[in-house]
Picture (cartoon, helix red, strand yellow):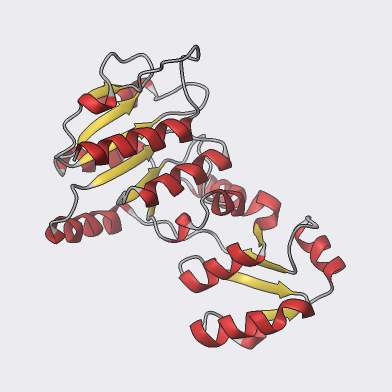
Length: 263
C-alpha cells in the first residue's frame, strides 16, 4: 500500500469523533482488556475513586495518564454530553496481521476444539453493523474477523460500543487486498461460504464439520463479484415473511449460529 493511502487510512481511523471512547462500562472494559491502548484518559472528580481502583488492579496506565477535568470540559473534548464522566482518546486499533492470524490458526488447530470458523467482512460501512457482527462472532466462538481496506469501516469507538466489548476478545485482521486473506484461507483448507439471499442452498444444508470462512457482503451491494468467484458455495437464510433479505449483522448472527449448531 502506498504511503499516501496509508496516511489516508490513518486519518480515517482516528477521525471518528476524534477517536474518543466514552461511558464508564465501555471504557473500563477496554482498560481491563488491555488490547486497545488509549493515549489520553480524562475523568471528572466524581469517578476518580472508581478509576483509581481499576488502575491499581490492572496497572493499565500510570497516574500521569489520567487527567481530571470538569464535566463541561469533557463534553467539549469528546463532543458528547453522554460521557458519564469518563472519556478515553484511543490510539489506532491494533489489528492482527495475516502472519499473526496464520500463527493463531496453527495454535487453534492443535487445540482440537470446534472447527475453525472465520468471518470475512466485505465493505461493511456501518459501524453498528460491524460492532453487532463482532458481538455475534464472540458469542459463536469465531476465531477472527477479517476486514479489507477499501470501502470498509475499521474499529472505531462507535464499533466498540456496538460490539458490547467483543472487540476486545475477537481478533480483527486487516488485509489489503482482501483477496490475500482469501488465498491464505484456501491454502489452509478452509471452505468459503458467501452469504447471498439469491442462493437456493440454505445455511442448515452446509457441512460445518470442516474449517469454514463466512463472507458477509456490504449493506448495499452484497459480496463483490471477484470475491464471490473465489467462494465454494453461496448460502442463504430461508425467509418466511414478506421481506426478501436481512440486515448484514442479523444475517451474520443467524448463519453463524446455524453453522455452529450443525457442528
